[in-house]
Image (cartoon, rainbow, N blue to C red; front, side):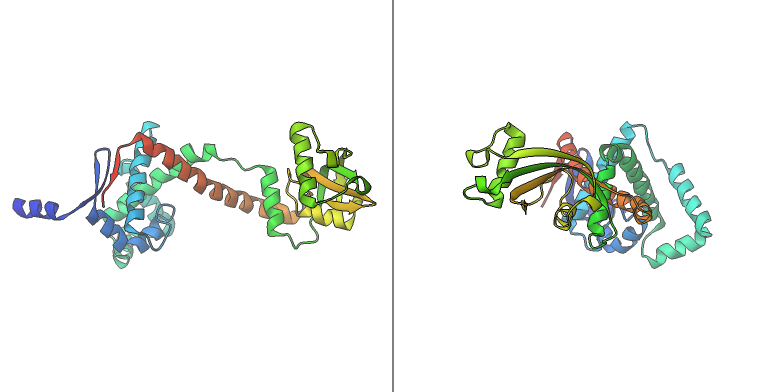
Length: 293
């Protein structure tokens, strides 16, 4: 019997090593076979129906890093904690253990695998809330900008603006091009200097402007420009104007207030993916990681 076990071990293949932990080919294959169940039980970790072997190896490497990092913060998810979570789930759904086992059987996954999936999910939740979440912030203005993008055809939306108007008499410009004027204005903000062609450009601060006080052309242009951006040049009464959007506030409505929480969560999730990816890329340098072909 011992000889048979030794032969089984020899027949398996090491596909990756992270510090002292070995990841075997049989582990990867088993995950491939049970990916549907894993997506249902732990969707934040197994978030795609089709995962390559290389992607599964990366998931296993990341799970190892997550366990070590949260352990360093004092969070160790022991068997008792996992069992307690499973019992809470059973009670919430009105299930008996036999019901759970039957469900797992239909998903072709063992109770032991389910147990470890719950442990990994608990660890990942702690990792997200304690390590990743503090690195992410979503501003009120970002929420408003996103709301407008999602409702750009909604004519009922209204804004208030703080603008800086850069303007030059068209008769003072020999060869006007929109790109050159925009470049001149940006250079003025950075260096305080203007090229000779636009040296007669003047500025004017315009604060707390409501849409009702703006021309239709300017209002339309400002709606397409985010806070911190420049409008395209507009010709108004013999002058070329570029408006720098210093502040763009959406006048809050019941429609915005209803959508606000969902937009904030969506932005947090989007940022979380990017921050998490960058965090792992930096963290890899602290480990011995070898992926074998």
